[in-house]
Image 1 (tube, rainbow, N blue to C red):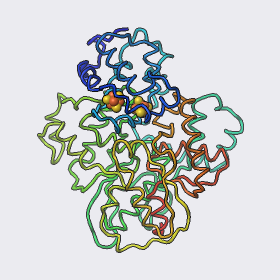
Image 2: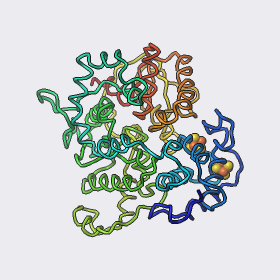
Image 3: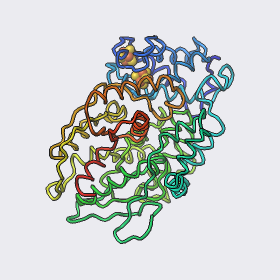
Image 4: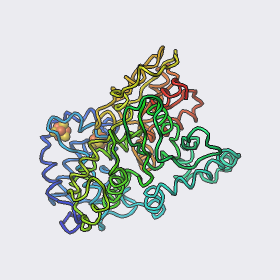
Length: 466
Ligand code: SF4
Ligand code: SF4
């Protein structure tokens, strides 16, 4: 199939793909940095090859067929290529654009030939659960019951889920925890408070982004972030209307859902007097930080802008792109914020004479360019020996839902991480993205390893007495 303007999502410009692809001078500097090229050694699985494919399809020179989809599907969107490109080709923007086209156009791309054609079950999960995280909160008691009563062990033993993708997800499920609650609260709380007040001298106000799956599977990190921020003197606001960041939808070609989620998040945090909007998962952090350029094109104005703005405090009457830019400018990864936060002189950290290997997530390393902050944060722990995990320039293979869609490629990348960790002699693996943490931790559990995988802020909170 040749792409025609009619095949494109309404707000997507064919020229934007061609123009961006034309910025590539084919120098090849990105090739050795691309994890999929390193594995297959095929030009079509390299950034340069994929850019040529996308530019060729957009200009009608090559068909957008199953073979095209194979190479685009294999891309991890790790954006290691973008980080080293001397021509500043916006690869992430390009590939998201191509995927939006693949998801919206039909002939020549039969369902089974591209991950952009999602199963009904996955579409339902993305629209009715992931995009509505209050429903995920409602699942918390059920999942805790499942994990704590032996049901989980029985289900695993029965092999009922085996051979389905659910089994892969279930194996990754970490212990589902309960949200941080105010001192004196009795019983388990099921959601976060709207405000967590500071302890000691007040130093400012920040917002906390909870994410979707993370509010079930990474409660420890969210609670640790609140604990550390409060003890440094920061009030933590947790707006209840916030939702999923939309990364999964955007990378899966569903631009409409991504735009809608971005809008809901902007409105949820709007009107609060915040120094920063803190993200504890770097994958979500990238999406939030790029809201002004959601899915490769600028945020479209929406017809009900006037009404919507009237509902919003300080953003009333301002163009949507400006609102998005303001929101994104405030987004900070928790480690980056804590690196410049005040209040450290008022807290004491217990020593931890152990080795901590640091896994640099692609989103933090290649896009937010903030990997150094994880090291700086961990260096506050007396006695800790901190070292980068060998092979940090390569993705671990988790990459959103990549591990489900491209299991062989993902496993090959994961094997390298486990081997590097074995060789490191570390007791802890610190990583700043929940998806990477779950993927690596489940492999370690299966291998019987005792290395603990956790977010740097969780380790810090522990040493501060949480
Ligand atoms: S480094 Fe940039 S310009 Fe060079 S081949 Fe890769 S994408 Fe193209
Ligand atoms: S995003 Fe990652 S996997 Fe995709 S082309 Fe770039 S370096 Fe390769």
